[in-house]
Image (cartoon, rainbow, N blue to C red; front, side, top):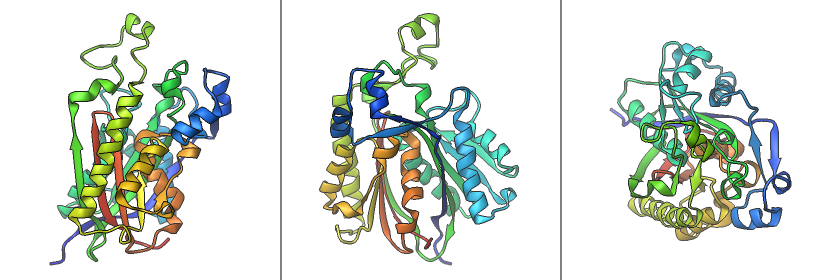
Amino acid sequence: MKKINASITAVGSFLPQTVLSNLDLEKIVDTNDEWITTRTGIKERRILDKGIGTSYMAINAAKAIIEEKKINPLEIDLVIVATITPDMHATATAAFVASKIGATNAFGFDINAACSGFLYGMSTASAFIESGRYKKILLIGADKMSSIVDYTDRNTCIIFGDGAGAVLIEPNSEGLGVQDEYLRSDGNNRDLLRIEAGGSQTPITVEAVNEKKHFIYQDGKNVFKHAVSNMADASEKIMTRNGLNNTDVNFLVAHQANKRIIDATSHRMGIVDEKVLMNIHRYGNTTAATIPLILSDYESKFKKGDNIIFASFGAGFTWGAMFLKWAYNH
């Protein structure tokens, strides 16, 4: 019996129409386009309207796949949403998404691993597929970061944007799909990148809101150092473990947090710039949505059998890399 691999067979995305440019941010906080661009590579980001939740973007990204592949939603077995901005606490956004796209035979749950959420979701979905019991899984990375960003804090408001990307994951018996993964976490530095209020340790109170503890906070310099070393280490390890050299790798699909972090990772891997895919200049850091948004933007470049490395780093800390062989021509 041939080994079953989990392969991506379709991609979809959704981005809000509202654009927040660096020039727009110059009017809000003490910053400028040159400063933002040189330090992050970001030029603009998308912002979802107030009063609309993350599920709206996730539903639309999922529908893009359903419509393109002409899938019967009743055939979907599982919906996973990777997000740190669920519509509400105590109820999975994935369950709501599954219901709204007509996937009434599916079950759904959320994954909270911040910017590594999609990568962790790929690992989770792969295990379900490889078990042989599940044939069609929708994995969606979606975040409405504008809902947790303080637009008076220039350290965070320049970085984040809103968006959603989705992939369909199905069994493959040709040796294509997910080949290997290297995932890690370290909770000792969780205070360096966090939202302090809103959990069981520090519930939302008037005082917490007044102190802006319900917004995302990061110690930029320390997070940058950890991100550079860990994402590059993971990517190098996955290559070494699978006997890949820099010419074997067709594309690096890295989490879009900061252009300098991506550059450091690609340089450690020895990958030429043409193989390093980026859209950070257009969307900023959309947290769990960055990798699937790259897949959606560059889908036409991928060829069946291409060796692709995914890499990410996020709050927690969480990080890792994945090696997969692309399963189709678009």
